[in-house]
Amino acid sequence: MNFISINKQSNLITGVVTAPIQPIDTTKILFINVGEPTLNKYYRLLTKARKKGLLVDVGDLASISHSFLDSLIENDKKR
Image (cartoon, rainbow, N blue to C red):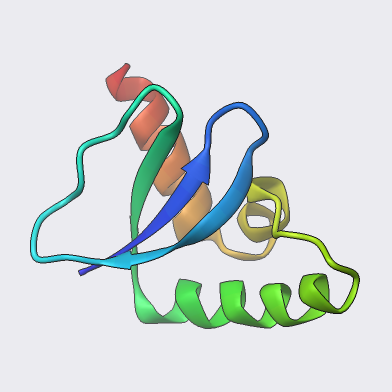
């Protein structure tokens, strides 16, 4: 399974983790389970962001991936 790691304070995506089970969220990092279509969208955004020396913002990915947005909302409801 693939998980996008998000810095909670900055809302920037810090990377992708592949693991058999969901990693445990920390006080600084949140992990969201994502599928291949969302990963492809993320990597396209990352390519553009790296040209400017930036990371991808969560909102940018959520605006083009409805499944990612749903995952964020679902995760927020669990808290």
